[in-house]
Image 1 (tube, rainbow over the protein chains, first blue to last red):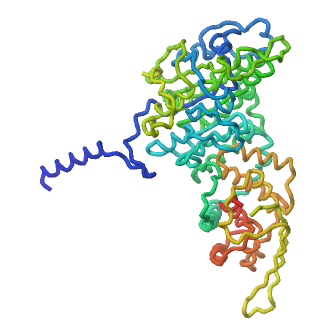
Image 2: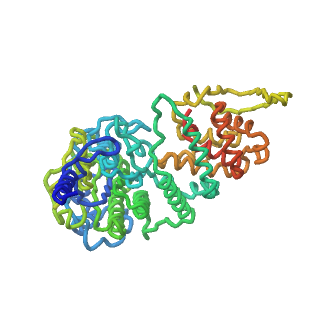
Image 3: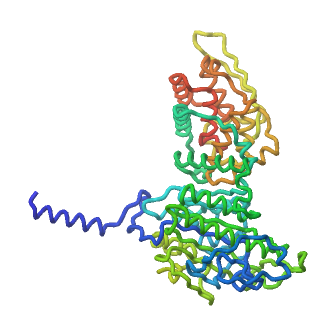
Length: 431
Length: 162
């Protein structure tokens, strides 16, 4: 080939590789995935209904001493109802990012399930709770797994839920073109990890490598013979064979630890269910280093019946959040490469209900009043990515903005079809 | 077709004629219709159905409510159902009391073994190709045990549907 022709061909090839769009295995044609701000996002739903009066406005003292600056004492009349917690970190989480003190859950019932659904799908939802039915619109996990190039396996996306009921079904939607094949691994550790589970799953049938291959051969043949003209409902999400083995090993280890009591008050404090959920979420994080993990806490919902315990559980959740942040910063691969987003699903009513606790304080429901729509949002991360020490005190930002923001951080926001999301990217939180 | 817990009593009456190898089977099934083929299964078993059917298929008796609840919670608590179902089957299949034939019995009449186990776990007869292919696998692999066949059947896709 002549030198001139060679140079011309090389230049054309180079130009084409820059200009030409990518064709995904799914057949979709689009430009390359956008640049990422960070390679990991952890979204903590500080849920159960947290009223801004107790969180941001510190009406009962600074209950979130690991997140917020300040050392205001807990109200003296209820302080004896507080669980002792370690001294807060010198640098509060607030200093590592941008705090929206007046975030809003604008529309839809102020119910836990609706609030969770909105936070995870980026769309307000009026849908009634339907047990064992996925949400109508795609979840952030499906957007992440479908619109990343190259696509990501399921161990990169996790939904860690504190309870069963409708919550496990938030790991994928029933939306056409999305669904289980793009869903997240869901784990409800408070239900799954226990000495009892360890007992019922003990002494498993052990197969050698060769025996396993023979079983795979037989199962593969059986599966090849199972075909229907009807589209079958999915049996949950699927990991690859290799990933499923990793998952089994991980789950067995967790249950062995539980059987030995290794997790009991592992943080050196009297741990509640929120703390344990975060504890196991950290285990998932350390084991799989997921690019996207959503985890919730709902112990705060005791606020329907006991105001003082509600206050205490806000403190406990704040400490759990600190442990989560600490774990992110000490996990190789995630440290300095993770954006943490924190927000309640909704608030609580301004007016109390008629249930009084032993301190004479009245409990709080959440019935769609203006106060129950006021929440906060914290975006924390590396200084090169997230604006540090920034506070927005006026109403700014909504629940539906979290999914677009996560999509933007992980570089796939532009790939989401127009009209799917209702919110915007919280661009002001980033450098 | 509705799947119900069933007790399958299969009586195999082989014909006396050895030269044409004709076999005559009489199946006595309680409260259970057999599927004509796999394509009739279009519904996903619920978590509780999967566990209670797996237990009765293996042990020939109903699981206790207490144990059903524990397994059901475990299965509900993981998004990857296949993985948890695999863990549950591995645990159940290794317990004492599983109704199983030994290796010699299986290899003495592989055809009968395959038919019995398809009826037991898939609630249908194997078609000719399935019968031939699985028999071929078993006969060519001396290390395949009955328990390995049970495990493969119970972790197959078909077993998750009814």
